[in-house]
Length: 403
Ligand code: SAH
Image (cartoon, rainbow, N blue to C red; front, side, top):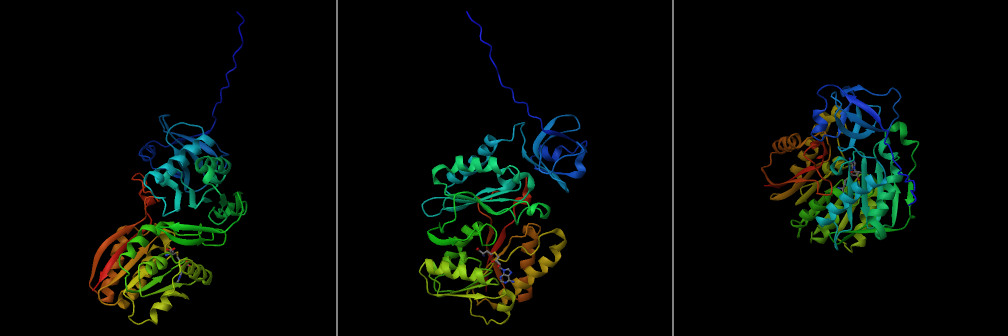
């Protein structure tokens, strides 16, 4: 008998090792993915921005694997089991996210636009993927995710398979400033073509290259559907309308007239285009500042939608944001016809639910209107909130009855 030598290839992972200060392992052990710089006891001196690291407790117990950043949030954990961060790792993450949405029927015969991956909610801080009828927009909010781009692209291709038409990288404006020049927006797969999507059977044209954010506010799908219940024969005002998501639903639900207001002329053009695509004629778009528009208006509206951009992007601006929300909501509440409705939202992460709801109460008092809360509104399931990371809950709203 001849003995053949057997070669076994052993891949040894060598990620930089980080040791935490005593007691600082409790937060990541509860699956919170952020580790602040102050929690670190020991690290190699020349750690590279975005490099993969393994984190250990002061007792040398493995805590998690993540990527490093020079900043107050020093590590973002993307795994709580010791593993190699490679294409398979990303395929598991993205495929899980896809199947979760498939199982919940978030995409179906009526809807082919959804958020495919939502940062911490899907287990990888800094990664956003939006799906537009086969076109995927990749948006990286950190250099660590950007360095994983090739693996992520391969994982998207494997997940979406034959339904995939293109992948567009739109990270230049979301990466931290010092890295944005190293990133250029562009196609990572496929080419530019006209993109039309369906959301609850309404058609929208998507401009992810020129438009704001990834091209469409996917997070308002359920709230737009809720609006449909209340628009028949009503005068509807949709402020901060962007591509006219709420406006299209209002027209479809039989509103007598719908007015859309957005400060951006190109947003109003997109909104008008979407109204046209759905064959509605009872709509008028206004390129104007909402505050100015409301100031000059008389009480002609039965339903008003307020969906402004985040007024607060940091804790420092929280106070001014609250003043802004109160002013805006008081103006709208004064204007709404008796027995009308207000749909009001905040997408500022630092203004939490309670603060927002208290601010709306203050606005209603100022406007001297009696209001009833019909529903508390929030982000849909393709923007998952995980209990270990409550910071992920950013969109909140209220539907108010205004006597
Ligand atoms: N409701 C929209 C998303 C709103 S995004 C949807 O369902 O798709 C916020 C929008 O507010 C952006 O389009 C931005 O151009 C617009 N905007 C920002 N400041 C504004 C202002 N002062 N007045 C009117 N629009 C404003």
